Length: 583
Ligand code: F6P
Picture 1 (cartoon, rainbow, N blue to C red):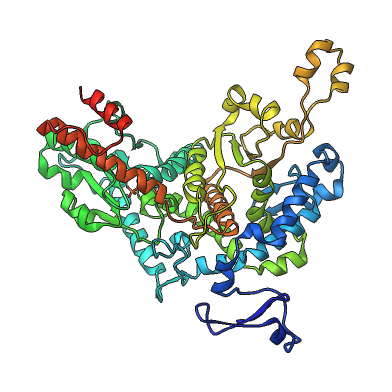
Picture 2 (picture 1 turned 90 degrees about the vertical axis):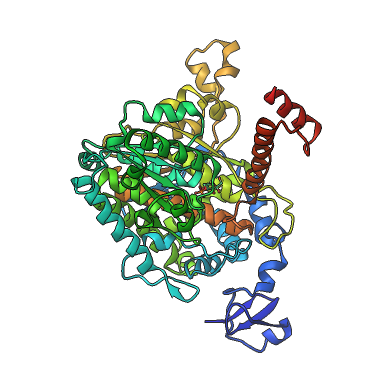
């Protein structure tokens, strides 16, 4: 399996990924049975930017070309549409309103091949340190793997560790829920405040909001309350604790690093709130933690026995399936509901990583294969021409900010994974709104302003069908308006050009399992984008820069306030603003 040939260029014979041997094209001719494309050598992976490859150029030209055929005409081809409606494990995906044909799929395949997509997916699932700038594996998929799965990081199967923590969460959450773990005054802890920010907040919030619409999950949540505290604004803290008594409240401090300024400030504030009412010893009963940094958890005053670990191979924005999400959600809904959520995500993981990419292409329109293919690739058609992406959905409101972080923090990068400046912009601008809220806000822009590809996520049970996608695709012509006797001077204003792409994901219902599937679909969508662009989607140095500047400012403000030190070390504008603020 390690013998492979890249067409007309070089042969790679490799005993392992790290020690490839490159031979010349001349040598290649001596191996008649050699086939096109498999594993690349590291030399190949780093030598070229994807935009320099022929498949990229071909796709770009093709996308420009296909835009000339109106979606109205593409949608009249029933055979085409039929081949673009696919289904996997209860989710229907309709990409017939994408500006794409079967030929596009062909070109996307070539692009995937040029970017060594399948190889990169394998490396991720195999626990290789693909987050090279932080020297870490990227294994959030292990967080939802079945108990008997084997996923190695540094030669060690991480799945048993994952399940140890899951078992501990199950046990702890059951004790809290059934009242055998009580607060310092003996009262049951019916309210949970989860303190965290970014990935330690947005994912769990999305899943919580979605589960609230699931009757089964809601039944399990009866009599319980889960709130999230992210912002440091004292008003948010006040709002969070309004009406709550520390006696019946459990605070979960969620922070991968346990150093994030906002989270630690909020944690200290709530620790003081508990101590003030119930005495400092009550903290042990009323505060628990989720972190990779158990030393700092203990230093903060939380009993390490009441800390739930995760690992550096889980990126913050990919951590919802770790204790970060599982603990607060299990406290609210019970572990059995959360387990369904994990199973849903795992179903997509297995689909995403399993069947051979090449085989899928050859089978071409085989339903599940096409789903898998498109789930990874459709974004490129849109990205090439549009650069932004909108998610519209009935009752999954908080998925939008979550996707926003997963996508924008992952893929907003300026250099390739090898540090080569990119001559194209990566990342999309992701935004969205639940239900019809968007209609009364930004839909005007998507109808007649910019072309923004939309994902519509619909739910069959207890939701309204989606019609907007046709409005975007077909538009409305001047002729139609004339027939409707619209006044001549209004016709330009009421004309819709249409030809605006969208994608529809239809779920049979919105339960824990489907929510898990959705999460994984979007996580993998982002990974695929990053793999194709050739960037590292798993670091966030831009945010780290912001964090260190904030630390500098905070230090200065403290020094100025407490010791009267003048503001220095900043540029003119910042110095002026800080001085004004201090005055
Ligand atoms: O926003 C930057 C970031 O590092 C995210 O990636 C992360 O999810 C968030 O901060 C919170 O970090 P932590 O969980 O360490 O408090």
